Length: 323
Ligand SMILES: NC(=O)c1ccc[n+]([C@@H]2O[C@H](COP(=O)([O-])OP(=O)(O)OC[C@H]3O[C@@H](n4cnc5c(N)ncnc54)[C@H](OP(=O)(O)O)[C@@H]3O)[C@@H](O)[C@H]2O)c1
Image 1 (cartoon, rainbow, N blue to C red):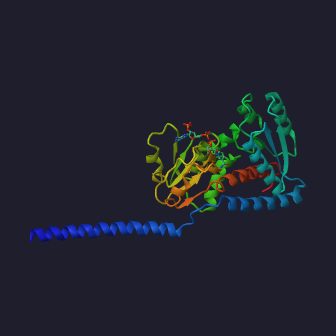
Image 2 (cartoon, rainbow, N blue to C red):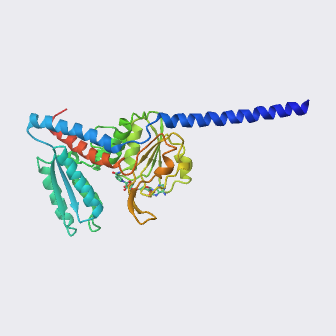
Image 3 (cartoon, rainbow, N blue to C red):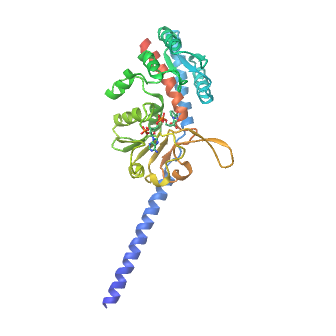
């Protein structure tokens, strides 16, 4: 009798375990089938750019003026040249004026300072951007600080970073602002969610952490000295990778159903010898685990350019009191 009871208890335990496994499998399939997996940064960027173009056309008739963006580039770094071309093309597409200054790599710090001073005083220029990195003999920080804070299209001037810290209106850094717009357009509610940002650069990680905090997320910042990174990233409802290490975020580092935003842009040569762009997230591995994920290319990248246009338009509107 005691033996039969024991067998019955074992059977119940086995059935219970099968039930639990089936329940987990069902939930996972349900989550996957309900969600739109890929966040299409290109489509969202196009939509925002069309809105910007429409506003510029309206404002032109009101104040007989259009916003202008000046991009300063020094040297001939091929990646930078491609980014600058992209920015200038986007500018023209939405009806902005583009004031490109493409200077030789021998350009001196004093020449750049005087160019920034001229652009600061030019009434047709509403946004100024210094394309980084600069050749090694130049010091980027004093140049970024020299741009008038009201024309700081990249949102990297200490005044604007200070306003972000204080939660005041101001120009926001383009890439993190682009990430926030992607989340907003995808209707991801951030309030009370645990956001983990991997990377703490002044360009991406730090301002993004502040923006997520302002949106009421609970924020953790991880970096190269963070021990057991996977134990932190696995806690994330929203996981953002801004590291610059090809495909370092693997499936086992991601909580099931997390929103994964990949800021990284890394050029690699694959095993067939082809060169291609990949992010900081191993897309193939992580996509089945995530509820939403951005691809590379076509995720965060198009949003960075769009936020540059957005910032230049914002500065223009501030100047003319347009809403
Ligand atoms: N999509 C876009 O438009 C766009 C715009 C800007 C940048 N990006 C890309 O985004 C990536 C990051 O750019 P960034 O300018 O922020 O780079 P960065 O200045 O080099 O900063 C990288 C950050 O990653 C951290 N890190 C490095 N190795 C790590 C590791 N093994 N584990 C955890 N953290 C680690 C670093 O930590 P420490 O601070 O401890 O060194 C640092 O904070 C790059 O791929 C860049 O090309 C894309």
